[in-house]
Image (cartoon, rainbow, N blue to C red):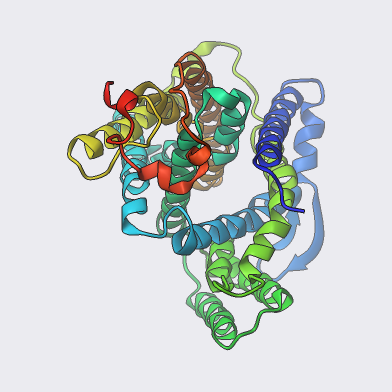
Length: 409
């Protein structure tokens, strides 16, 4: 039985609440008498002893293992949207691409300026460039009718492009010394998976076996293991026009596991930082740069890019939206929780104090962005919807000309 839009909205709202709950549980645990037990849990090692790596800890399994499945889902969504969905034509790609570029470049610049281009922490420039779609959509779901469908579509498409940018950044800037043999093996496995798709292999089991092999080879290569998820996703056949799509089937099967288990578990592992006893710690260059990058940089970058693109006629404004609603959505893009925490751990390996400082900045910036974006959208009167067509993807890029009330603003 197909899910109704109400079912999907309820699921997204619940997933957002579960993620928020997991993050709060981690914060409480890390700042309670159970803090030592919490950290011992993360450091507990189990499973096989891998060549070169030994036995993985709980934290390592989550960050390098489970998050590879998260990136597999990201890759599946990006591929589907690129060929069949919201990014399937140059016209539909234009606005979210422009917005996402602005939303990544400006926060990075704000961060660099705030930290004074200090080489000791400048490697964290990408931390405020990320957007957490799970949290952002959770806030949108809580808002209900106060957030029009076109705003949700805009936010999702920006996040999709943002995810592509984050994957590229991780691969290019947060990769250790390369093992060319392992990397070559990974590319060979990916090539074999692509050949399977080309010759009509549709059984998902073979692709999942390939994904597991690919994960280990990418891990051994020095490129962050989560990139294996995206590499595998690119080879899984979309099956356009076929009765059963392997890509859609896999996306459907793993989506609830990712949203309700993997992402909350990562939130519980990553958000457990000891809060400072005074506000002074928040105003140190690193956390302050991340906080302002997320809260100030994101809204300026995303909203400024959309405004400039519309005024320069490079793209059209989403139908049925006020500029204030677009501004509220731009603020929600400053919720960087999952991806920002993930990149923060990659940016400062072996430097737990800097990782904790980055977490504080990420949590503060994400919280400010969530509250501000929620309030702007909640108290901006929506434009009355004429039809249910607002649900359609085309409405996201239909422009202002057909919406006299939007054109008045």
